[in-house]
Image 1 (cartoon, helix red, strand yellow):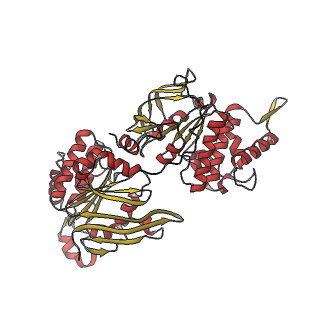
Image 2 (cartoon, helix red, strand yellow):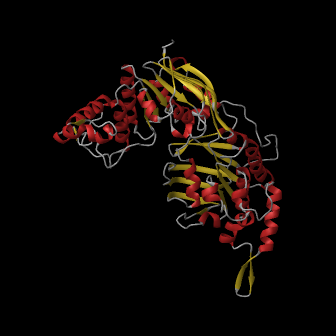
Image 3 (cartoon, one colour):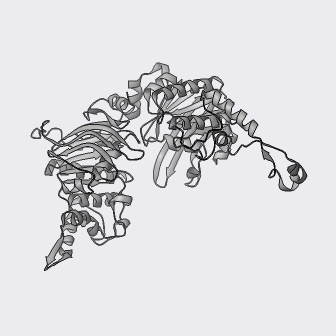
Length: 529
């Protein structure tokens, strides 16, 4: 029996319905090793860790194929409880703490220490431990030991509510450290919410944990942390295993290339010599632009958009790229200066951008983008009717819905965008994902916009539909001269369609690249280097 590895995941394959998210993936982690799990958004990292931790979402969707071994022995992990029994702990990216509890209560929840009472001794066989008393002193002692291990100088009696987020992250780690028999810890983006000094402290804590023989799987996008603290790393890309390499034998540039390297199929014609873009002709300018969107906050974006270009905006999840478009729509409070065609917009006025010629296709087509129970034709004209008063006709003092004009426009859009449907009156909710996305685009086009902002245009649609949507955006730009901003987590798609690509990291523009630039340059900017 091979016990060189603490963890072996071999041939892991996982499907969600008809979508294969992992195919023949492997992950091998040595004893006492800090092992980085790397990859872009959507590479399959979270799914692989959900499999390892026995999360219900895996087993309620048909399970997975492949083998998991702990210390050389094959195991079946069908629940988080089973993972804990095997000595696997997980520090989640989203806090799993109870705000109203103290530090000790959070660390010991589910593993409370009790001591017998007179009543429990008399009724023990009947009521079990129900009448035993919490041993607060023993629990506090255990908690303080865990806190000391990670170097967190706070009282074990302090309530979690109101703590700085960095402290909360350390309490999460202390809870896992306190568990007996821990052999493997999963750290899911643990430094994402930490200050630089707190992140440095955490890396030191990880080193001390590993020195005790506990293995660590470290999920992060920060290449400097990977180089600093890990022994080896595994790279996933598009649900496939790419490589397992020794950290000391690689560089940040090589890791970046492994993460994002792929063949790029350009959807726009670079050979069009008649196409010229004036660097001085700025249609939209963002200056110190901030948006208070939870999880996607923009924190001081400075960016110019040239008239007639397709500008891609990329970056990892949670870095602020989605916040840029949401703020322009007025969905979240924003600050800073937004200048469109020389006019400063006041985004506190709802609909300000729409009234000035900026149209939007939301990343949430079902929650924000579409009226699912309404007809395709009503979805297409709704915004233009509300904002511009289009598709209405006057009859004396009354305004009436112009059903003939609506029907004609909808039929034209269905034909032009190749929306596969039974007709203009079909409810939008009954369309496929790709055709729903085309209806969202049709609604934006009904505004006759000067600038089209499209967020995550291919999310949740199949490969064929993705290509059609991207080709449509390229056609609008090349044939109609429409300026387009495409905000996407799919770097490959941005590189296939954009003139320039702005990478957003930690709420700001980390840099602007040409789509033909080397893969590693994109990886470095996305990783904050």
